[in-house]
Image 1: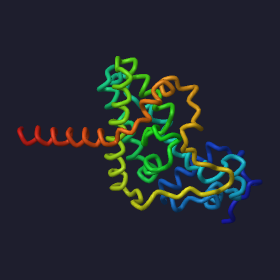
Image 2 (image 1 turned 90 degrees about the vertical axis):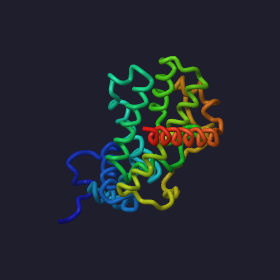
Image 3 (image 1 turned 90 degrees about the horizontal axis):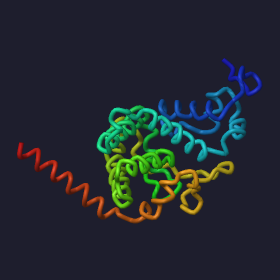
Image 4 (image 1 turned 135 degrees about the vertical axis):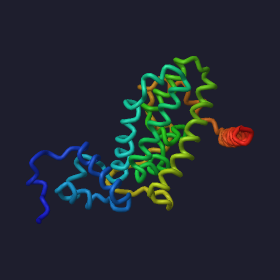
Length: 234
């Protein structure tokens, strides 16, 4: 069967359709199977037609990550989110659902350059981070407590869910190297991150930017040992 061309499509190509098809390709065949040419073929257009809607593969991959993260907040359980404990539980399960549903996409969330060093994976969406910070603020957390909780919670999610995605078929090799394709860029400098629409992020950015890796590793290790000790004593 001959491949369709751009002129034979029954409806106009859109960015949303491109991103959705890219997600399908990655879910089915993995990230190495995704190229602008192969994606164009899957959509029935020439690969160059995609550049009217995405600036390159980097832009496309960022859009795929954002697409799957867009489903996190709507899936939170409203009955649980009245307390901070319930909120963390609901959010953790919502992010885990992404890792389980899209194990070959989750490493993109975990390893690609975030927009700023403090925008920690896998919560790499400003909208999700703003919701997280604002919710803990509303529930009575002080700024220091919010920053500490954010850093510890993301470390917990990243460690558990990256391992789980690998067990579910995600590739275990090094992160995909950025490609200089079109005019796509990988924003990874805090100074280029526009947070004007995210007041909680803007207020807490200095606290979130601190290097607390050592403390959180020790905290997670202590919590693991405490949990194992509790299990042994039962």
